[in-house]
Length: 258
Image (cartoon, rainbow, N blue to C red; front, side, top):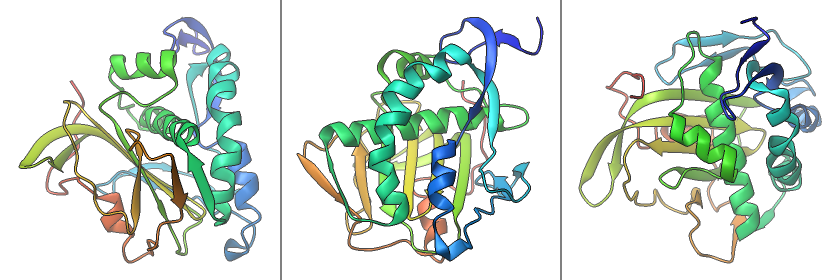
C-alpha cells in the first residue's frame, strides 16, 4: 500500500489521502486581522498537557498543521458541507471577539466542529493517538460529538494568538455527584478570542457544570433556546492552565484508549 493510499480514519475506505488542515485556512485568515499579534499567527509549538512536544512549526501566516489520515472524499464532502462552511459564520465572530448569540442548531454545529478537530488532532502526534472507532464512526454518520462527549466554550483575552492541547487517554476526575475517575479524549483550542474545551469520557457519566460565569456548555445541548457569548468572565493567561486542565488529573500521565 502506498503512502497516499491508506484507510481514512472516518470512512475506513482505502483512498488517496488529502492534506487535512487541523485548523482550517479560513481561521488563519481571520487571525491575520488581529492587531494584537501583528497580523501573523505565530504558532511555533504544539504540546500535550504534560508539556511534551507534539510538533514544532515555523512562524507562518497560515496555521499549517496538517494530517494525511482523512481521504479527499470526506475532506471535501461531509466535513466541508456539514461542519466547515456552517461553522464559519458562528466561530468567525467569536475569533474576532465580537458578541455572538447561538441558537441550538448553531451550538450543535460548533460542538460538532470542535469534536472533529479534537479527533483529527490526535493523529498529528508521533506516534498517532488513535481515537476510538465508535467515536469516529459516530462523527462520520452524524457530524456531531458522540453522545457521552462534552464541549464547552469560553472567552480568552490573553497574548496567545492560538493554543492547542491534545491528549488521548488522559485521566479525568469528573464531578458527577461523587468524583468519578475515567479515561478520556481531551483537547483545548484557543483561536483568537474563542476558547473551546472538548472532553470525551470512555464511560457514560454526567458532568456537573464548572460555572457559567466563565465557561458555557455547548454539548450536550442544555435545552436553552439561545446562549450568549462571551460569558461574563474572560480567561486570561494566568487562568489558562486552569481551563486546559479542567476536569483532568495532572498527576496521571496520558495513556492509550483501549
